[in-house]
Image (cartoon, rainbow, N blue to C red):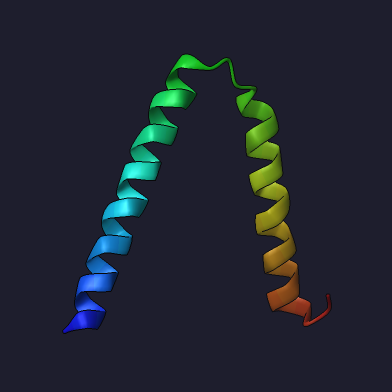
Length: 55
């Protein structure tokens, strides 16, 4: 039972952090092309790790 309470508290804290981050990103001037490139680079690295087993 205590595990469910801790998980619920953790999820609530995660939601609050994500909402606060979303509010900050709306007001900030973000280079979305750079963010997309970084996300794509990480996704490619994980894919190549999965496909080749190297890294």
